Length: 241
Image (cartoon, rainbow, N blue to C red; front, side):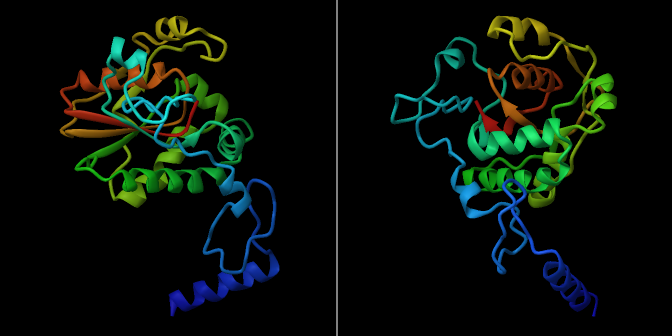
């Protein structure tokens, strides 16, 4: 009875408030099945393809296959691989910017669901014991009111059937924004900015963030996590710049 009521209620809502794309406002088809983005916006997502670093997922504009980038060869990261919905441009960039800076939290669920599909499609034998969102400093969290990485992680956790752990990794040092800093400045800016708050029995952790640019944030997070005797950390981001 409850299921029938929910379906009737959903149909009534769709009739009174026809579903639209969360990005462009275009009407969605009647059989959208709770789809949040229209086909045009989905089509503007640029997947990584084959030409990217096999470790950190840095896109290679002038290559046709995957291999390790120069940075990963010189400084092997603590994570084993990076999953990404696509390149940080087009719909992905627009959606992340709205989520992060315009308080459009409704975008977190569909972005997380897209990222969850990428993780599942990767296959392999990696099944995380928990999902850890990249934490914000408490002052930044109070200022923004939410952690966008946590909001993206929630639907992934539901999809994979694993818990989100928001207490394992803490940001203990308030750092200036990474935007505008060089790679070396970013690395120095984040050194010892995170710490583990507990000993975790988990063997595998999935670290989630919204965007990965130079990768220094997730590198430092993963280095800190592995110091807690965790076997493997994989990274999942919505956009890879």
